[in-house]
Length: 176
Image 1 (cartoon, rainbow, N blue to C red):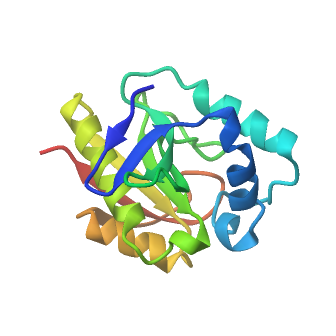
Image 2 (image 1 turned 45 degrees about the horizontal axis):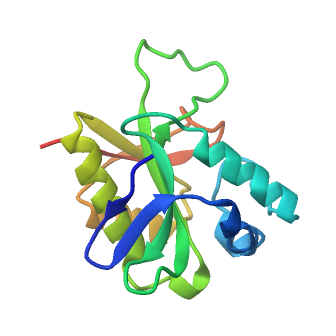
């Protein structure tokens, strides 16, 4: 998986040595509370290593799950994903795989514009590689992520239950 850069950030593949940061990040309820229909906190270094292995297993020229670091100091600040989105049970696939973008950052990194900057860099890269459409699936109560979607110029399509077996607010961005 390739690294992606922006003015202030370096998005890179996750490494085993990131395990303690990932455990700290995803053991916090305030970070994971909006992730999926049944969010859970991470409990062990072993869970963190297994999660890192799954993140690295994505072998695709466009999709990925990146560690977000500051460019200047390489300090880890969060996670950015661009991957096929799982449909809710009973939803017809419709012949095409939709791709979602998502992020979660450490609370110490909140409020610095990192999520917007990282997502914009990944969107630019993906659209430059031929991806035509990306969606964001946000919890209705996740006002911060909805604000990031708006800053990215994403269009709000309304509420849906098509993904993750839970009601979500759906946003999209088209290439071009």
